Length: 479
Image (cartoon, rainbow, N blue to C red; front, side, top):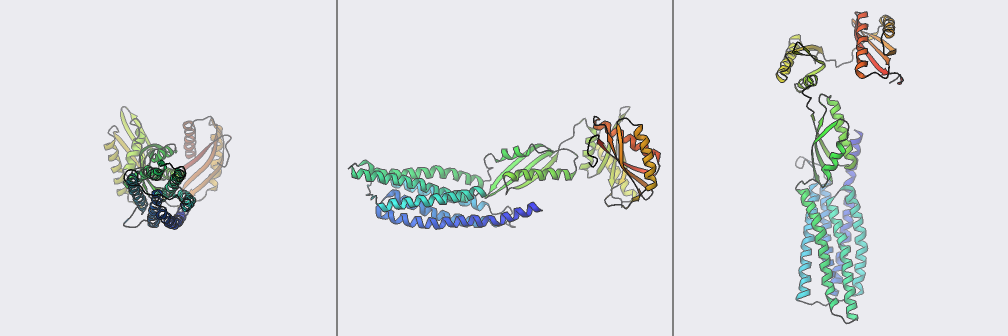
């Protein structure tokens, strides 16, 4: 719940920062457009007029960006259940389309001036002053927009930053053209007169190249194309997580600043639902380390048990049939295979209903696993509530004496401690911690504790359950 509330707070502050930087761009574009248009008309420079056109386009683009950022920040609703993030991708597409159309006009006008019609250009100090001021303002806006666009993965702000960045390059190109024209007139050379339309062609070329790349990404996002490399990176993050056996499917799509991730993972068969949920939560946390705003759906499927592991197959069949089972064992006697297991049922059920459940489970196992000829199902009540018990002092004293003799007579056991006996109605429950030799395998340790449990129950007919916590010698006693 803590992580969820932090994410909600971050989402609430996200539109404010994006709207602020977008509105600043609107103000800057208004100023630059007016200044360049006035100087362009006064000097007759196509390069300057193309600059004014770019700034005018920037003004339109920044207004579109501002409106799209405001719209994309709205939360998901019944009509737009995945949010409004696509508005930003649409905005970026519109901006790049306008950029390409403007570039086409500049190319046509430049060719006209180069081939058909000469235009007098006046490289006045006002032109140089406006261009230098434009470079400074554009550099500041491009940097601010790029930082916020990168922070929130916003294509709309990225497109806006692209407009201001291109203005920097185009202003430099126009300055170079005006300088060459000025030098040509001072040296009485004619060829520098072509520098201004050539500078405009350079501006158009830069715009087409960069705009096309962003336009392709915008169209890809609108068509739900996976961001380049995102699927591979996410699969690489998820694969090493403990519990994940295989990443079966990775589907990724971008909507505004949010990444939608759809995963299908293969997990171990017959693990508890809580374990599967824990693995899924870990997967989501790992992905959000790189994609903080990602919306992630994880579909977990069980790994099919080996054909040679009938015990796991029995558990798998029972779980798929919505039965809770434990203590599953499969034995073969004279070529006949028998499965033995306990099924937990609602303790409020009558014996008839419980027996029907057990019979249904037996039939299901035989149908799914024909190599099993017999199925024996033991019915147990499913314990859900805390049961009141009391300390069984006399049984505890007797059990301690019995346990001391068992320890002395059982190889591999070092000592036993923390023994407790509790009386539950007519039954006695015993818990005890036993220290075993550290070199034992899990199977050997289990066999030793099973033998000790059997001997304790044989020593007292009232002891119905024994829980032995085995720990290796040298481990912390409180473990």
